[in-house]
Amino acid sequence: MMESMQTIGKGIMQGINQFIDNDLQDFMPLFVIAAVVLAVFLIKKIIQKIKTK
Image (cartoon, rainbow, N blue to C red):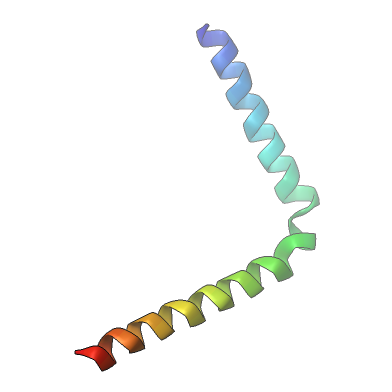
């Protein structure tokens, strides 16, 4: 049982590393857009909390 879990863990890590090496640059604009949208959303929430106090 323990060996199979280690094998699954190694497979997952290998897949993640392969994704980072090969495909991450294709998705980078989406991550940047998501980070900007998230930051704007959080700043809006903070401003609303400050205004209601």
